[in-house]
Each structure stands twice: as structure tokens, then as C-alpha cells.
Image (cartoon, rainbow, N blue to C red):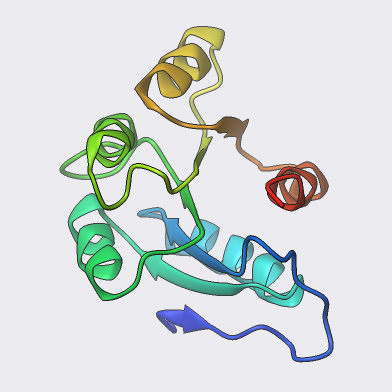
Length: 135
């Protein structure tokens, strides 16, 4: 899998969000969302764990982070909390995309610092709308 997706040059991209870091341990989910976001004009980098995500963040701070909750090692809730408290990454918006669909999971994710919470399968039109609203 490519670790970086380039946008198509003829697509308009939201002025504020151009670079997205997508974190999910599922290759299938990474491919699906990466392809969708790439076709929508965004540059997408991927990571399959919190540890890989921190390495990617060290290379370039994205405009938005989309992440799963259930991952090996550090889970998405903990990573969201750590990023929200981090001096360099605390202002980067985080959207959680998870199969955990209870209202308590959503509330917990938002309390950890996520700006939005989507349940899988992600409604891509709604996701795109929320990304564009960050402008």
C-alpha cells in the first residue's frame, strides 16, 4: 500500500484542509478512505498504529487527522487525548471513525479531544461535508 496519496490536480480542495493523516489498522479501511479522499482532492498519508502515526506526525503536521479507535497498542481514544494535550499537535482537528457505535463511545471520543465522531461504515458524503466545514 502506498503511504501517501496525491490529489488529482483538477479538483478543488478546501482552503484550510489539504493534508490528512489517516490512522487505521485495517488495510481495507485505509484503502477505501484513502481512495475516496484522494479522489476528493486531498493529500493523504496513512499509518496503521499510533506509533506509526507519531512517526508520520514528526515528518509533517497534517491539517486533519482521521483515526480508528480499535488498534493494536495505543488505542484511538488514548492517541486522541495525547494529541489534544501535545503542544505541537494540539490544534490539529481529529475526527474519529470507528465501528464502536454506542453513544457513550462517541461521548468519550469527544471528551478525549476529537472534533467529530463517525461510525463505520463511514458516510463519505457526511465526512466530506464535515471536512469542508473546517474552512
